[in-house]
Image (cartoon, rainbow over all chains, first blue to last red; front, side, top):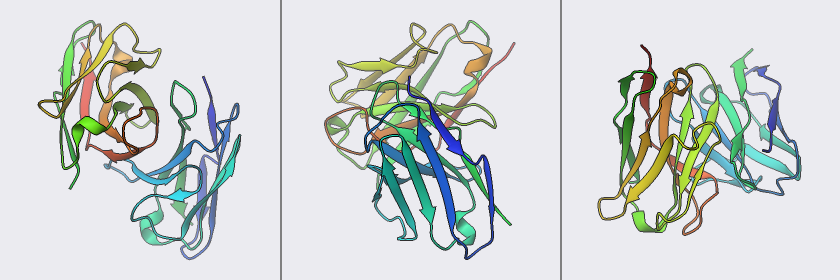
Length: 107
Length: 122
């Protein structure tokens, strides 16, 4: 099983600033990585797939990068609605696995 | 508009059974693989099971293998999860999800239902 490790567990950032979230895979997942955003009481929402492709309707301030074992989600200028929990997911191998999440909170 | 509507959650006893359903609409049901993902209270996401377009290929997390069965009825555009031998640790919100690309399974999920809570407790 591929273990996905996200860091940091909690990230405190001020609105308007940049946020950088990391996700590391225990072995290569090529570019088969997705990022999701989850707000309290809601289902997750797909942000990025293929490591760097924005899903339909996702604002350009969200960007993904990386391949192999190291991945990054960057939010260029944080808006109030961006404060949430973010999960990475690998779908290169079965079983599909998720990271434990990064909580992005207002500083 | 794509909609995935889960039902069937509730209180179950340890060792008991529960059957979840997910009614889908707004897309060509027979063209997409489907999945169940769960989230224990206050915890992260855990993939549970996936099923191919035809329903002939299924995948399970080790934690549920042999106890849960995923199936689909393409004539009713409905996904199911039969859960047997329930354990306390199966308590979670169960989400029905749709694979983003057509035809093949094992991808990212572009649509999620609102989830249904299963509580296993005596």
